[in-house]
Length: 351
Image (cartoon, rainbow, N blue to C red; front, side, top):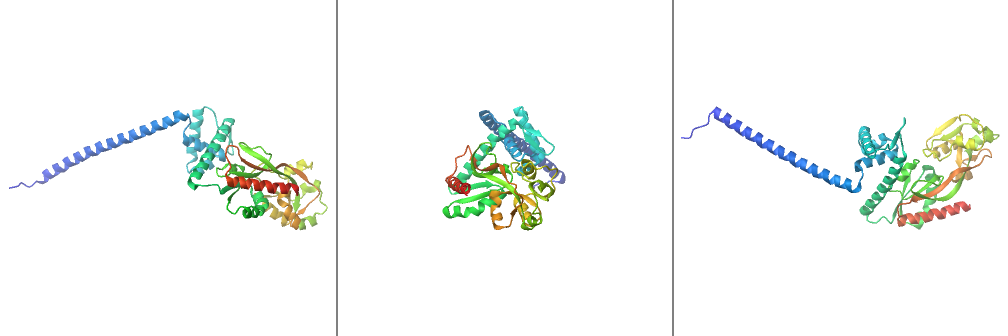
């Protein structure tokens, strides 16, 4: 006869199985922890080998620094990298501690690069740009028919784009991507091969070729000009002036124009705009006087949409330049576009 287990026996058996299961779980957990530790140790050893070979700080910290330097803002860098500003600050502190020098000067409204930070950013921006170019080349297989050109919103809408159909007709097989931005820091993005920019011809790591000079003068709508036909250069400061808040400080505003013209003035009144094209629309609507850049507004002046007010005319402090990266070979598409821009600029200078 087989003896059936009583309640006490079953409880004893369950407790034994529970104890055995716990021992097996602890053993498995310990083995897993040892495996993870070994993996992490080997990973650290591998990273240490990379660090010893190149003698570089953490690549993560370098990427964070590059984003901060490009934006000149820890907050904007954090948003781009999808991390907290505190995490960005810790990475920057770690790399500064390792290098033993500050890379940023903390300001009330943001940060500025120190000389050491400028040096490091220049190298990283160039290296990351080249690496990104190679990666895109590998992904795309052939980039010979694609080129990215950067320029300001005003220059794109009022000078470049109206002339682009000639290039497209001549080179239908080339795809031109336009990066339109009034922030010159965007021009350092990896995909940009060519830039048309206003300034003084000196930018880090860029070859700059002067396309043409510029002239500036006051412009307004026909109705406004009729109401102020007796206006002179000396009376401009008393009129409603239309200001453009350029992100790029090289572009001259009303304060600089009046100062260069020798016109005494205090704080200039008037409306402010974030885009040059919008300021010109306000001028056409007889709302005030804008600084007219001849290469950009001459077509509207010829059409009578804008009128030159007073006889004030000044050479602009800078000029328009075609630039490209010193450390990067231009693609065949970029070389074709560069040749065409040079040709158009020569015609512009001759006119």
